[in-house]
Image 1 (cartoon, rainbow, N blue to C red):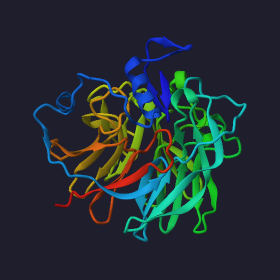
Image 2: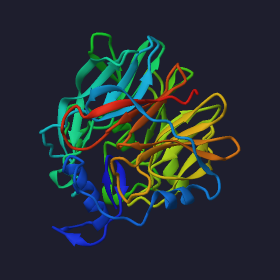
Image 3: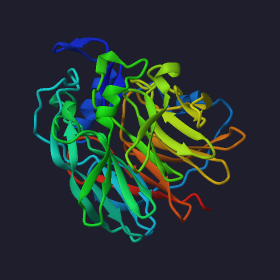
Image 4: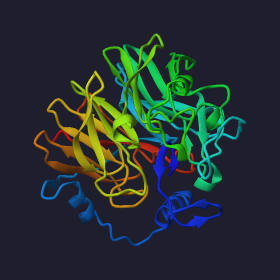
Length: 393
């Protein structure tokens, strides 16, 4: 197993001292070549993917995505603030610093990092972007995997205060001076660390870490506010934690203990916690699921048949909106992202497709979905965007 952004890939066939699976290597090479001109015929068609989701239960009622904001740098998680603006976590620009601590093994590592490459943007209701802060850490994989970037993973509000969770920091990511953790962001763009998640994970190992790609500092992906406390998901170790705004960290559940290395990604709350998973690569059609996790830490699968899930929203009608980064391809591929709505009866409907490497999703106060598009990949800088999907009609 090898990993990208904490997400694991199975490889076969040796090349240059490490193991590569041809279909995935082609896919990542396409991204390195600015997502253009690299194509390969595949028998894993859209129809086959639909069948894998759930035979006879998938319908199609697609809405055309509308570009809402541009100029973002590897956008990930996004939330609306109490001021009505949309706040977007950005992986940022990566870095060039090296560290001497334990690094992730090649071909993913060693990482190069920067203390100031990560960013948070604010998007006005009219779609105008402004910078909240551009002084958060960012890091990138080795050149063997295209210098792909991680940084700020998600944002959330508690009252009027903005918090962010870092994924691209820590010594194992080439950032020796700043750990992965949750930071409080001030109105003037300065910030302070409230919870050192790098140190906490190193002191509280999970039951079944994946040794082939283990990240000592973790690769946090998603964070939500439930009754004034922050809950976060970490894919590489496989766990969910609770963090108070006073900085107290406790584990809600070690997902790896019962589910193995399923790579959990996104947490939502609707009476209970609901967590999606990416699963390992290459993408196997229908292998990702949605899990229900109770406050006492019990877990069970409540929906399955998805592909590489990186977003999850539950509306007031108990309908789930599931964001698939890629459906119908073996590796992350531009143009193959989509959103599946799951009704309480279990019927699945394709709401939108043709998304380009989406990495986060939220529902706005207007009832529309907002998705971060072009969430990872090599430069050009500023390729990222937020698209709006009107599901209110």
